[in-house]
Length: 570
Image 1 (cartoon, one colour):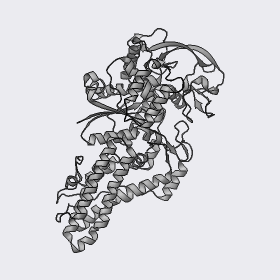
Image 2: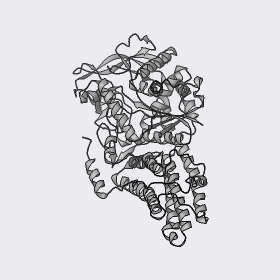
Image 3: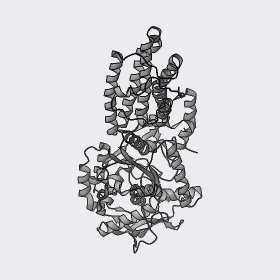
């Protein structure tokens, strides 16, 4: 049995996330966690809400609520939506937790002791109208790189360029809209990432199995232009983790908090502590400390490409710089962007389909299958309602759902609701088993390698193989001349449903459960080979015909949804 620590990039607290966020981290992470559990491995799958920084404060202000109250409410909402999509987190934590406060302050103290933090006097934008400094997202303006007029002070959403607030053209306060801004001096702490450049470069070079997308982004930040830069880890904000040097005060840093990018990745570790406290004191350090048992853990992170620099450079710099034996990531699976109908999904602009809206119109499995089978691994991909309709109707309804319906209903009409006995396999059945054995091996290889789209393609091919067998065997014709052979063909068909349920569960867990329930399978075992798997249901075992697994999406529904989601989120 292997041990897998799996984390998904933690979503911002500022509202409900869109489908692009879902497929860029949480959903493929869940696919991998479910697969590893199905293979009998020990898994700790963690995620949380990212609750600090300007997005939280601005969203709370817009909602007219205190920021702590707003974050608590949104955490509950995001947790419920995650359950709706069947995201199987072992714990869904909060970066505002006491555990993350203590651990972030601990890391800052360790880094300071190692002379990896320096104090910098810098110039920062101050709003006279608001009576406060305006860091990063509190400032909006025109991007100097692409000309986008709604760029934020930390990053341009249009071209993804990292920015400083003073870079913006015609800046304005995101709080009041005031342009009465001036530049004043303030003191902040900087993490001396540049001092760790060689260590980080060697560490990244050792990751020969990482996606090219991941390593290319990391290398660009390391070597392009002036190379890896030191980065501020504090902000002039009210909401966040107070700046402390471990347990001690930090003179000159009174009233400041740690910058959200610094504390958010540390929440991955702190989340394990939250999980431990929620589960009777489970030993979380065996997952995170290599001196306490984590040396045999394989740690995999999932995230969108915009998060890669922080997870390949800044967070590793924090861990390496601490000088402590923390577990570092083994594999970082990054994703490109899912675009929406010719444009970009955007939380801030309310463009696209959001997770709560998706669940209002269709069950989770419809979305899980389409998003995973079309996920943006090697390049950006595009969501359109036509493509979504085609994928659902052809893959889920026509191939899988139709097979399950035809086999179970035919068996009920001719043999009753029991697995029929009689007949022996012939050449057609042996050929099918040989094909399924080969495909089962490839499917497992693709899942192990986290090749999401290729895994989906192989799974669909396994479904198709059963359909092609059913069409060629034609038990509805065979039964007229040879009832025993027809019984064997249908018995094989019922075993195929069981086979499909087990292999499909990481992608479409609800449908898999319906198939297993219909066949009275309480705990499915991952098949070691197709031959044994297709002989797992004994003759005489009763079953029930399940309800239609997947309804087709009509043209009328598709057009209605296209119109409904054409504009911004209300």
